[in-house]
Image (cartoon, rainbow, N blue to C red; front, top):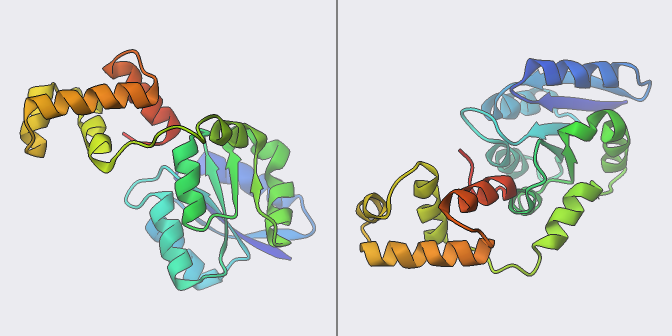
Length: 204
């Protein structure tokens, strides 16, 4: 039996996963968790073969939980579940040790097959996610400072306020904003924030 742990802060999604797995003869849902911290506790307790991990969760996000589990159990096989095919988010999750990346909209179609593939030692990235990664493969990455500026932009701050928060001059912030727009191919600040959220560069 493939023993599965489902981690998601939405009970409805966990119920859906439970129903899908419940119909299979070769797998069982051994535990559920609704936060990253709970995920770590449940993993220690049950040592599942496969962990299904949501990325956006309160307290501790999915990537931090993934890193924590893999830090203790290097052979943990974790499938990341997400609503968005953000390429930056995917890269982060893969670097943290995720074995597969699955869009929540495709669970019914691809979940069981992905669980079996990862259990057999394979890695899986759904085609939508692969397209997103390929599209931005040659993009110039934002610097950590540009990501900081972008976070403050996403909260609706003007250049002057951002400069004060980050101990920069207003001119430096303007220069960072220009670079951000150019690198993301954005028309304006709002557009830049929307692109960054979609790609997983920042989250709200």
